[in-house]
Length: 162
Image (cartoon, helix red, strand yellow):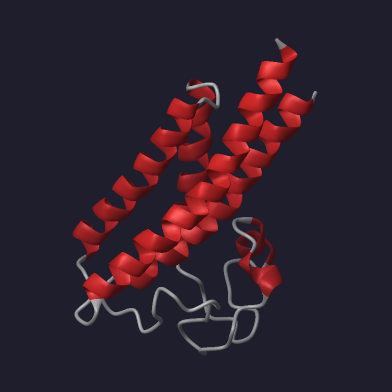
């Protein structure tokens, strides 16, 4: 039972990571006015800070019908699709690899490769791209260390069950 709780926690971490991925990648793309290290998210149209409840991936988009809570401006559907893609891709990869350490390494590689592909397709930022990319990579190391701790916890639980 404890094993399933840890796996559910890892999937929930992927759910949160999917929202983080969207923010991380969109802030690195050409034309972004918000630096990658900014702690808050803002509406592109009205520049209002997005409420924490509206930053919950997928559900917030559906609950607000794809619009900003403040100005009712449409949020691009690719933001929603990007979050869904990441959630399905990361969870699917790990289900195939049975939430093993190989699955964790595949998750990190999948995340960073997808980020690289989107940056190459969409083009990079004109100003401070290198600095922002390094900050993004450093932040991602911290995020993936937290996710990696869940895999260690899962390995401990599985070892005690044997």
